[in-house]
Length: 113
Image 1 (tube, rainbow, N blue to C red):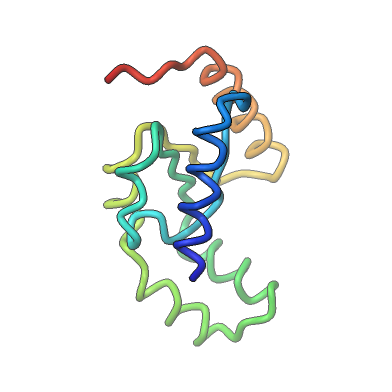
Image 2 (cartoon, one colour; image 1 turned 180 degrees about the vertical axis):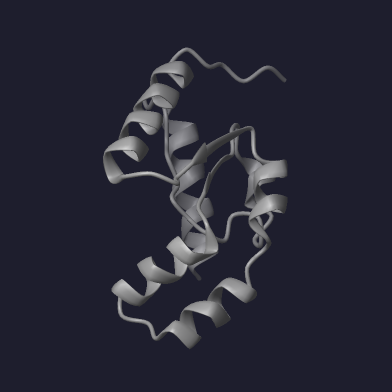
């Protein structure tokens, strides 16, 4: 249901033609093979320790966090399949700055078929 809803919304925005850019924040894009339907894939990477700390902060136990990470496509594979990679190894301000730089770069992007 979630994937069908996401695909429906993507199609809605594409057919409307009045939106310059749609951003999808979803950890399962590659698992769902959704990247084939997107113009650009951006991967945000982080160390496993940092991922675990964030998941624990969000309410999971460390064991649950490790289990969740173990079921995901490895970060190196995700990064290798992405068009752009943002390394999230620093502060939240660093991540925002890197994201804003990439956004400005992408504003001029047009898909070439």
